[in-house]
Image (cartoon, rainbow, N blue to C red):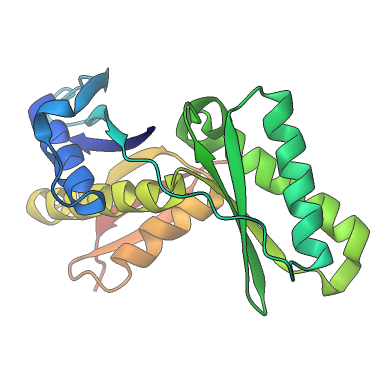
Length: 227
């Protein structure tokens, strides 16, 4: 059995738990809710007169039935084999009980870890797996040059779950900004995560988004539309 986790936010811990549970139900139809465990990361703060609001944040976990492990494809490309070997070595160094699956198309390579206890590989808000992805792409570029495909590295569908979490957060913030008429700053995020928020709200009526700050503390601001 592997463990599936999702992170969610809300104005209260209860709302954050509900959002996390709804996401788990989307990922695992027929979910037994009694098996879900919650970890409260932050109880949130309302701030003075509504200024400085930070959402409550929880992580929900549930055991996921193990899926059949696919064997490496016999026609796996040289690049795919290189990525697999590198990631398996990283997994071994981290003492993970995991398997790496490689899926390639004409433009990219998706390398996915499956197994138990992948939290160490993912890191806080994906910081570790983002670093692994950067390292792999750097190595691929050095070996294969300009013709190299872009490599995405994932673990336990973290990126899919994180995108869903960020899109939910973006929707909630947009609603508050429309209702209050006041801008709201999100927590610092990586460039790919900021892009998710910008894309989610680019056609949302009544609000617009900007990025402010300096890396690695750059963040998204949601503000009332100037139109």
